Length: 113
Length: 111
Image (tube, rainbow over all chains, first blue to last red; front, side, top):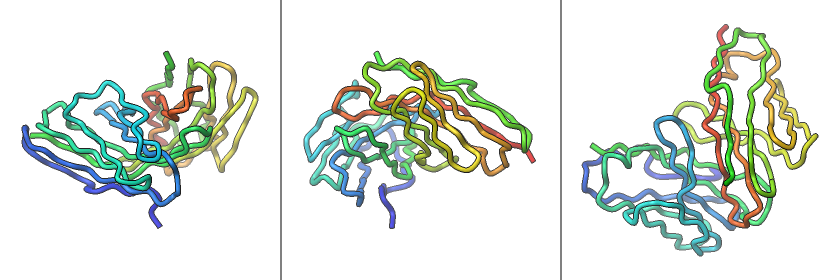
């Protein structure tokens, strides 16, 4: 009965490759988020989609492109991977306009060699 | 600019030794302050939401409190299984719903 799921759990790839991470939520929330957690465990927002519309696009390189086919799914595609992209990427879901909490997925650990 | 600072960065306690974690924040129009627990290799797990100054919430050995400038997470008689990183986040008045996180406090409870 997973609320927010991500695939894959681990991703190891070479510099310059293109990769995707998928996220799905079954909580009925209208908004989904991508966060990046660096080696110091600092979580920072990257993108957010509300009902398939992009509402947050923080200062993130153009190589990162989120896509939301429907409000239950949010994918993250990364082009031309760089060493600095190595991090843990978390998907989350919530209700944008409300005060309530967000629920996080298990994370995808991306390692760029 | 919305900002969250947590202290200490790391905390080591003996089992049964109570303590508090601090979360200081500046935010325009606080809509909610959130505490999460994160175990190694896992996603943040929701603990509490606090909405207004003076509010308190409890769950087992944890109690979260909120003032206009900071929140405390009090841990009473901790056990080794309470060892984790505790994250504080705020949601401001924008309708984007984004959370601004602090850097976390890593708690280790020794038996």
